[in-house]
Image 1 (tube, rainbow, N blue to C red):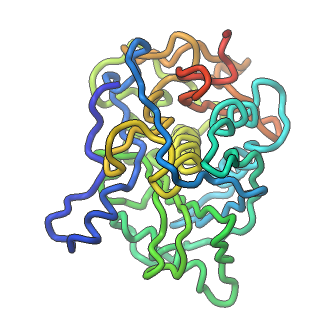
Image 2 (tube, rainbow, N blue to C red):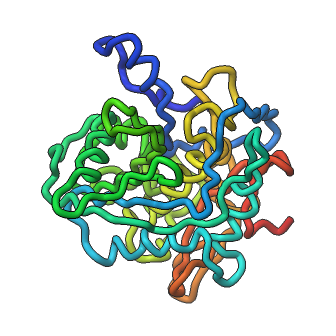
Length: 331
């Protein structure tokens, strides 16, 4: 895979210890055709002795940051519910079970097979403003877990926190170098260490960078035409792609010391990075997403979900096959 844009902030003005910690933040980079995986490359995916997310169930806590419309929220909730719910094959749950679920930690525990949306918090008042730094995500989580009168539960054992920002929210390096990221909270900010991810809605800011292939790419030409989003919203359907990317990497590398390729945790290549932009057989260099399904209305998808939903999710690095894989593969 080609070199990615830097996924850590400029560190010159930060204290040394804090800089070393935040440099490991892992993110989904913006789309560029040259990033797509080369199927002939040698990949050295290694385990670095840290834990994976194995709670059964793993509790998802959603923080809706900014002003959200109910239909958009419903799409994202249904995607998360589909991770461990039955649906017609190939299903979102098959996508999860056939790759992330295969990763284990030193205790022998596999990545979780079950998720539950255990709590939601609406931050429609933009508690930290509409222009955010990456580190602000931890303060947003802190605000949610101390909110009165309905605080979001703080679950240090089985909890994963997802900050989902509305289309009008600007985030440091969003659209320029990243579409989402995952990391873990600092006890000094939130009170405990828990894994979290942030994903932004790029629909009005940079769909060609963070909602490809549902918008024309802004970086260079692509051999793939623009696809029609399965839920009718390029920004939200693009969020599904990034959310799947981040959840897969968060589950297999929650503390940035478990599964990744590379020699240092400050710049790891994780299981979704290796397959960026690949959604079916034949996907890869040149901007081709691969063979995907097309519904009667012309929309494109590769997995089915709950409530009759369809989604497009990227393939992930399968540790058994040593290759990018998804349940819609013909192999």
